[in-house]
Amino acid sequence: MIIDRTKAPSLLDGDFDTIPMPDSAVVSRYSVADLEIRFQRGAELVSPLAVVYVPYSVSVIHDGRYVFAATIECDDLRAMAPLIGTSLKELQADYGVKGFYGEKRVMLYGNGERETLGPYFGSDAEDEVASFLLSLVLDSFDEIEEPVRL
Image 1 (spheres, rainbow, N blue to C red):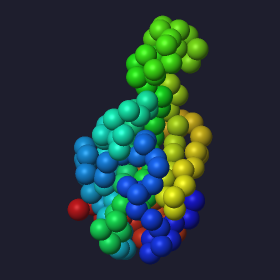
Image 2: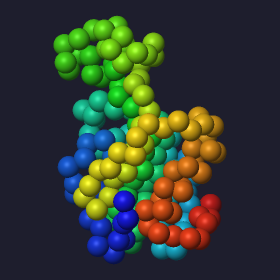
Image 3: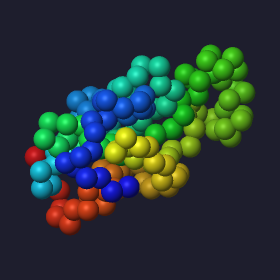
């Protein structure tokens, strides 16, 4: 997904319930060109009714507008179970997990679209997750400079 920062609509004007709130749970901030990048851990989502958990994300602000997000997210089985009338144990068996979350996947949000990049197989070390998500931002905005931590 390539984002035109000058034309991209604000994510807050879209229909995506699973995007992180841009000011929630910010761990660190970065800058590259005219973009502000916020690395987040366990951010609150736009909709409190979302049935996904987002352990890590980046939110990108351009000219005061929230134009892009990259997330590592997974289905929250505890939230899903009562909504679909199934026990948590049944969902865990269906998903093949013992915990409360499904498989981690990488999602991109921008240009009024949502794109799935597939499962996340990377490290759970926070610095490596941050590096991975920052690389997605650089690719999506076609930036060659390295982000500077603020």
